Length: 405
Image 1 (tube, one colour):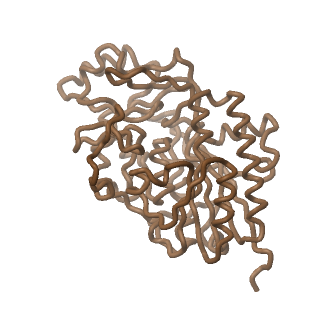
Image 2 (cartoon, rainbow, N blue to C red; image 1 turned 135 degrees about the vertical axis):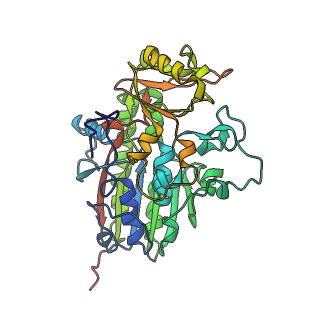
Image 3 (tube, helix red, strand yellow; image 1 turned 45 degrees about the vertical axis):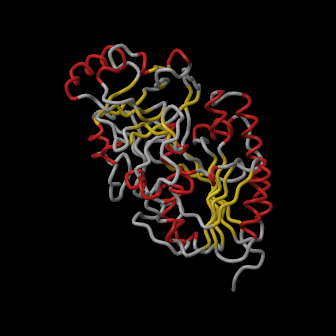
């Protein structure tokens, strides 16, 4: 994974697009299922290898970055699944956030192509900052009226939809029934579960059904606990043990089904204490330089600046923000290919800030809209650190009991 050694991004980590990221993993999966993608295969898992399996499951443990997995293993955890199976190091997309990453898992498109860049997304053609996966505004009100053509508006391309094999989305809770979940993706078979036991039962039942098939399986709770408690909290460790046990049980149930199980994450997380969390709403003079509220995540924020206040912003940044984050022109990120390869989404440029703030180690940012309570979460992500960008990939073949002739 490329570590940037010069320029404004020096010290940051760009995704390994071109052969070592989740974009290429999805290309391998899609091609192995009879579909097409403009992106090359993942170097560690070519499509020809995956094509030999009747069923492919790619199971995403939200938030389980490589650094976190290796910490758990160093503590002696993961003895039932993770310590028994080798893992590859690959990279997620940028921004290293659920909104961007799961849209890639849903579609096979890069953030450049799908345009879903952050948890809080700038939609200037509607004059709002959207909480995009929840289809609400920044303050929780409905984003669009009932009947609005959300799929047509977002216009997310899907290479997953080109696959010839039966396709399934297996997910926790009501995710499969959300407005964005229905509009942004094209899964023909949607199934839900409410706990890890349900995940194991649902995924193993899907794999046991006849015919060539593949499914995206999603588990969100690890990420939620890291946000709430911090990555090293004992409750996080206990939940990791629960995940490890569930995955071991899943492998047992997949025996003889001619399935390849791929376990990975959408991003990693890093911790910060409250004293190292900057609320951009309280930074003196900043709001006066902005054309609209910031968009983004805790570790990267897109700022949309008023042209006649650029000099004032420079002063605000130097006095109040430079110690905690670096500033990069949005156009520089686009030119560097940070959002991945492919044909840019028509709204890409308008959704990337004039300036993007990327947090330094140990820092995070929030923006509290007027009239809403401040929220602090110890675990955060979205930035360009190694811990956020690098994720594990565990590939477990579960061959049929009788090999084909």
